Length: 215
Image 1 (cartoon, rainbow, N blue to C red):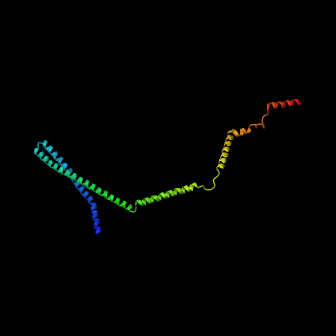
Image 2: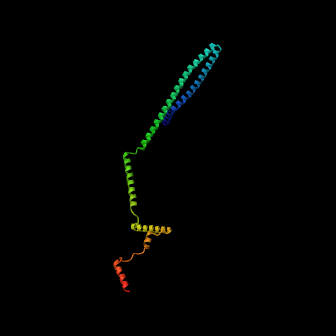
Image 3: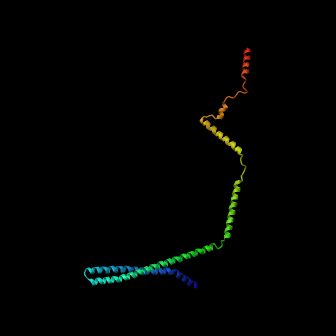
């Protein structure tokens, strides 16, 4: 039962600003209606005064102006009351907003305290060290996997020779299509040079003379 009464009291305190604002707004609405009524009364009395002045009814016009003055005084009081109520409403709303903001900040502080309850700088540093170690281990594993060759690797010289042969075949095919003889083939078609060194001109002449005398 005590908890029920405590809850009811807390709810009443919570609703107090709202109820106060509602009451103030009701009173403000009533005063604003009174303000409009007094303004209408003043205009009406002024019209009566103007009408009677034109008709030379000075006493009636003066009485209308006297009533107008009374309405003016009441209007001034009503306007001042309206201003006071508007200020009170604004103050209560501002105070209520401040209270709600403070409650929200308290709740945020409690939540952060609960979150950080089991968290310390040492635990954070330990966790970060573990993450760095695991990251370094992952990089070392990846490097070990990619640096080791799997299976027998082909000889680079054989690969270069095979690549050169393919390039030569491709060039020969292009030459055949365009009708151009490769330079190597043109060189092969040249007449072969005579074997041995060229004979001396004098010795050659003597041999020719011997052939003539032999006849």
